[in-house]
Amino acid sequence: MAFGKLFVVATPIGNLKDLSYRAEETLKNIDFIACEDTRVTSILLKNFDIHRELISFNAQSESRKIEYVLERIKNGENCALVSDAGTPCISDPGVRLVNEAIKNGIEIAGIPGPNAAILALSISGLPTDSFVFEGFIPQKKGRQKKLKELCDEKRTIVLYESTYRIEKLLIELNEYMPNRFVVVCRELTKMFEESWRGYPKELLEEFPNKTNKGEYVVIISPIKWE
Ligand code: SAM
Image (cartoon, rainbow, N blue to C red; front, side):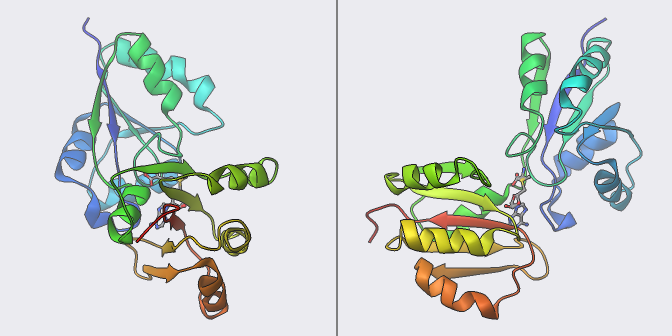
């Protein structure tokens, strides 16, 4: 029997209308979906009237489930890998599954779509010809070292940050790179989407007037800019 395929499918980062037509079509036609959280993906499927088997595939279960998913694909089933939001494998589970699938001779098809980092870069107004994506920097151990390293980074820097650490990050940027222009994008594509721009000190001054709840992408300008 011929192997099935592994489809890596990007899903919305907040606005369900951002699911692409191809993503919808793919999710309707595959045999099963490996998703981070079945409750989150169920909401998406319900909205598009998609009825497919969901199996949970997250950071905790990834190593246990890889073999199971690969076996099913080798037995001819098509699988879609999705994460809770955005593009799988980008600061999300799935890298090992894709890697093992490739090693097993399984064909991979990517269905492109939303990604918070690329969206934030595209609206940042900062140079995008060359950038470095760092995702989440370490929360505790290694955080200061990473920030020091980034001080020498010549390209635009893209970071992901959570509600809980965004203020801390701005304080750190003010300490480590006060002369770099920063764009903070919050809740992209959602109802309370906003972006603020300025040097770290200016952003910190504004911070108390802001609701800090939400998801963030932080874009930091190159060392020499304008
Ligand atoms: N795979 C996802 C992607 O393609 O963007 C990223 C997943 S990562 C676990 C989640 C982080 O992405 C959030 O903590 C936040 O930093 C960023 N993010 C995701 N959705 C966002 C949104 N709507 N607005 C701003 N940042 C977002």
